[in-house]
Length: 555
Image (tube, rainbow, N blue to C red; front, side):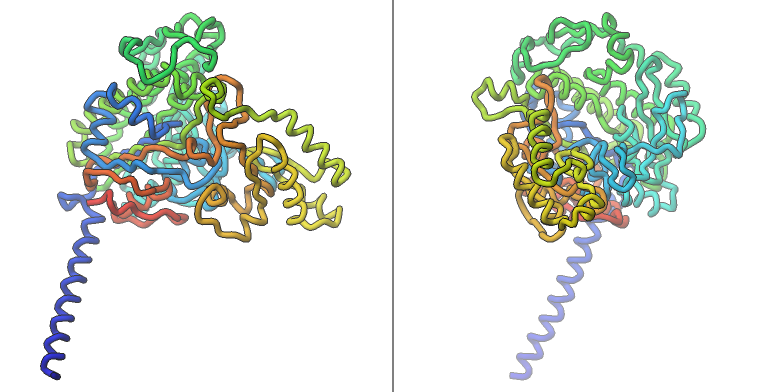
């Protein structure tokens, strides 16, 4: 009997050793590529305002070298979501790269009310630095409001600052936040009368010669031309009619239809700024990103580099024309070509199989509510003026003054703690009373208090999304959510920012070195991207990370 027990013990030890060895081998596959080496370059692509269904709606129109290449040869996370609100550009880019939500990284909006200094602040603004490449103030930017590190920071730290990080976008916040605190450079598009790419003295004192030469060339001027459809407009069957009442127009235009004669209305629409709201803005971004690859020697040595690219024009076009417009369809077909051009350049410059790419979005977007109404779908527009009047009447009746509310923004109410203390009231009682009042308004669906955000731990649904976007030091006292399909916005064009699924569901594609082929319909979340990359690269997670690696993605 003892002999049998001894044999079983030996077998158990051997099995335990074998399993442990297998686990160690499995772990090693997470942090190195199939070839045993990390990628020479990681390219992060954020497509501003890209809904997930843009992948599927326009699939038959895409070529083989862009979106289809990444989906067919890479990994597609089909049920990918923002796990917080507000869903806007600044928080989106910060969350992608920090592996955290606004509750941790602190970027709670594009703009927000700073309740400590009693003023509105912009997510990337910084008066401590100057514009480089222009005499304007458009370069007074830095990532100082972002409270945690990014995956780009961690890669720089891991390589003792040898690995380069460069970020590129039309929007300043689309470059500054992904670049992190340690970027070698971040560049954005000034537009206006110059059409130049600029930066901040946070990164450098003078533009590199190659950037100055690019600005001096005709690289941007070539896009000063009418915007016509890439393919025959009759083939654009995955979007609504070209002439409709749901779209905005440029100054001087009398119709919403193609072609859009940019030169004709050039000066009245901000000169080069008019390119932002066209598909050409993405091509300009691709041109500059490729020029960055050519001149900065990214991916040319043993230390992994990082190129962060944000395609901003998709957002401008969506805001102006709406998610069901011919303009959106054309913008994505042209972006598909730009992606193919970028991937082809990476193949030749860095080497096929030597780089890793991920593509996601900073938020989704809603269908134009007036369009939804015409389709008999519940939707509408918040009457902000009426809400404010009713709310002020309540404040005067209940408290005798409106002074206890300092600010209402980003669907949050900020209270004046001093006034509440002077009136000898409890903060949580005031929050609850205001929440009950707001919930009685027709267009408001749900309301939560800061006290609830502080005391509870939500794990699903809209409260979970709101809590992840609620920062204890920076966010408001009362949070309200509009009914599904309702927005506070003009009656043309689409917008975003809510906790509803049309704003949270976005694509996530991985492609290249270290990435499996396949897909998943399991839920993944925006903060999962950075720890997935960190696991692949074998670097430390960003220091505020709340996401987890998506293990199915990695070889």
